[in-house]
Image (cartoon, rainbow, N blue to C red; front, side, top):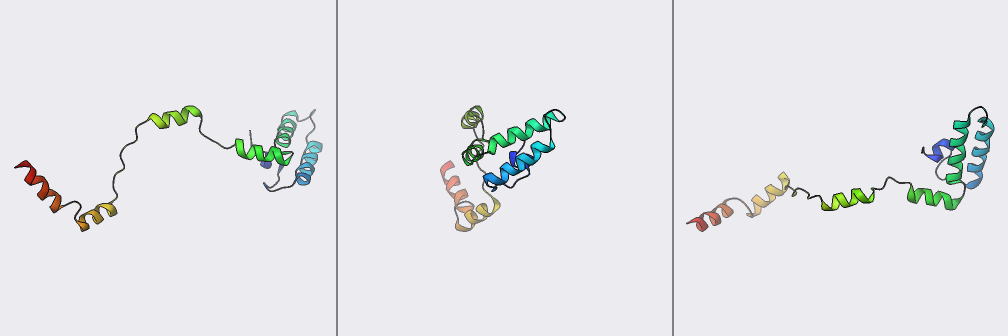
Length: 111
């Protein structure tokens, strides 16, 4: 479904009277006999946002949220380990967390 605000040509913060006036203008313009498809789109858009409660429900539930299957797949799919950035590596070298000290510690273990 297209954006009902766009279908009715009203801003998202429009009040009930503005939405109703836009709906009436479009209903007069698109007769169900001549242009039934447009008329149905206008009617459906108006029914979606006709009242404040319906607008709130539309805003809450019409977003592109992931499905339950997508959420479960994301939860069980292993993610690759994050690689450190160059900046993080430079900082680690500067403070001695990696580099010569690490190489010395490792060489003493192999002897």
